[in-house]
Image (cartoon, rainbow, N blue to C red):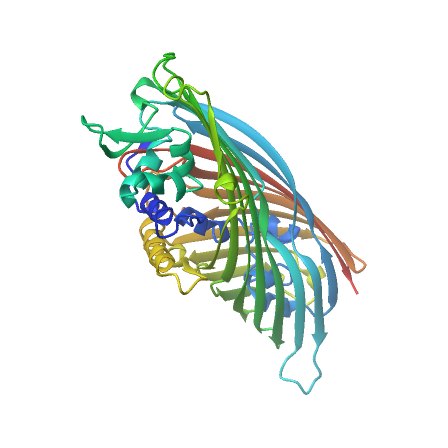
Length: 519
């Protein structure tokens, strides 16, 4: 699929790899979504009802959604939530479809909740404290596709980069060690000369008009985890208020392979193939807070409201890249190889920076059938959450305050985010039927697209079902959730002409079991 997308993403990348920060790892609007656009992990009970627990509470996952829900606890509980993720990704690129599977371990909340009834002299009925560790997002995924392209070439991005920066040949050879310098040194791109032999720019060796076959494979792993300390109070079993402090920890690893081959059949057109390999690692840690309330205007109605502050994260990225190019007779010595390690004294390219993620507002409502204090006598509930997230509020900043070039780059990156992303609504709905001691649950959720461009039809739909058993101070819940995700994947980006991308459809199965014990 091809689209003339000229948002500032490509310009940002070009600026970042230019003289202002040529040895660094670029952060783009797509990278900003890694810490904000995901289907949050939860307990088996929470997952089974679509994650709609903002007004329900009484579940350890409330610490990550609406911490006021911890206030419904009056006893002590230990919880474990192991799980598995099953990924099935189908990509369509240039009318060619590719399917690939990947399975990985995941986990929901693991932790302890300490509920304590208050004395008669207190204005509070009870209070509760929770310590949890949760995997909010899993990055275990593989995307692979291939297709015939006669619109553009992988090499053009490097020509754009050098021309935009006005780079001379010395800079082209040495200053862009994870991209353009590799292309220049392996003759994927070369000097453009006028009739007198003077260098007037740069040119790509591949010719899109005669046809190119492109292959893309990206294997990612890691996750977004959060340590959460939550406290909540319960006033007369009618009003609950709570807050939490979270420590998000992000780990992301991507192995990328891209190959472009001449599809013309001509063995004398100065291009045979190029291969690009990249290993990218990103790790970060930060801080956030959550505040929430739950109110019961009637015994059977619960209303909730929660606010999640932005997370402030500090990152360190590492990147290694290499390129191998065969230009047939253009360079008669055979295929040439170059790597960022050879140009950087064997060291990975590193960059430290900060990111502020979007804030979230969650409004919730629940209706509990036969609402009584003894939860064993309750018969059913239905619950819903509406979540607003300001994706356009994501922003980057440099950790190196004395570098004006980096400050200029991050200012450009933040403007690109505002032009590329949009704020979005997420919707979650679920319910439970209880036949004590067994419970049956169903749920669904919809996560809206964060992209302004309507052709980037990205959204996420989740359906879930689960069963639970509670008796004699212990419980066990089992849930399977299936999500349908749509997204766009760009093998490379060009700023001066049409971009081509793969439409990605990912079906993800999530099997989670939660076991808890009263202590």
